[in-house]
Length: 277
Image (cartoon, rainbow, N blue to C red; front, side, top):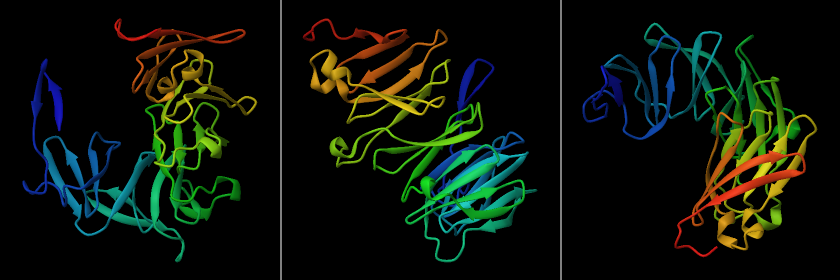
C-alpha cells in the first residue's frame, strides 16, 4: 500500500508473510465508511485502519464488497453477506441453498447484485432481504464493477452488459457485441460516461460502443473500418475529459479523441509518426 504524505510517497507491506493478511490472493480492495480499507482474499478478510491491519476471517472466500447507508457489507463466494461492525463480522443474509457460487457483484444504489453460475440475486440493505432478480437481469458467471460515481457494470462474455445508471437510479441490460463477432477468448471492457449521460464502452472485438439510457439505443463505431486498419478496433482503455470528449486507446493503433457531433461522432487519430496513415 502506497500513499502520499507531506508531498512524499511512503510505502508499507501488508501481506500474509508479515501477518497482516489471511492470504496473499487478493480478490478486492474497498474503502470503508470510516476511512478504513477492506481487503478481501480467497481465504479470509482484513480491515486496515491507518497502518494497522486486523484479520477478521481466515477461512472464507470473499468475492466482493459494497457500502450502503453507512454500513460496509462483505460478500463471500458462497453467497453469505456480512456487515463489518466494531472489528467483527455480523451475518446479515445469504442467497438460498442451491443458488450456486457467486462469480461477481455489482452495486446499484442500496441494492447489491450477486451473480452465480445459474442466476442473479439482489440484496437490499434497506430491509436486509435477498431475492432472485428479474429474469431479464440474469447473467450467469458475470463479474461486476463500480466506478467512483456509483455507476455499475456487469458482463459475462456473452456480449451483454448490465448497466446501473446512478444518475437516474435505473438498471439496463443491452447487447454490446453481437454473438457472431464475440471473441472466443473472452472480452475486455472499459467504461466511461460522458457529460450527456451516454455510456461508452471499448471492446477488443467491436471497437467502440455507446448506449443511450434515454431511449435504449446502441451504436457501434468500428474505428478500424473508418481508418482502414483492422487492428484499430482492439481498444483497451477509455476515459472522458472535462470538455465532454472521449479518449480511447488502441492496443496496436494509437489514441483516438472522439467528440459527439449533431450528425454523429467525429474523431482525431493520434499515432506514431512512423506508422502508416
